[in-house]
Image 1 (cartoon, one colour):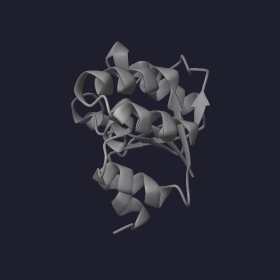
Image 2 (cartoon, rainbow, N blue to C red):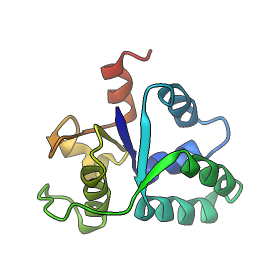
Image 3 (cartoon, rainbow, N blue to C red):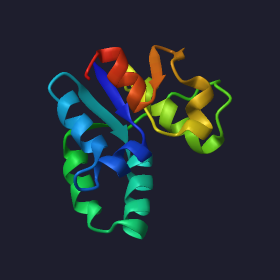
Length: 132
């Protein structure tokens, strides 16, 4: 299973004692984590502004991620332009799942599979994998 981590997932997992960090710890036994520099930079920028201590944790997390360098450019999903590199990275990385907490922009696509990538929230992934 290949799970692409959106910036908000990286941000949340970089905070000490977060539920997202705990989820990724459980998933790491059965998943390969992917992201791209676009998502990583957004997470870095937000952590630097809000929780600077989390930047070191983010960098450790990124060392356990496959960084996808390409983007699929033929993405037609009705997303805002700022989110196309996220879905494009997930598609280019042959992700099984795009894990995102961004309900505003990705919520209408949750549980939709686009070019082989199923878009899910953390709760949806937990339920689908029966991780409770």
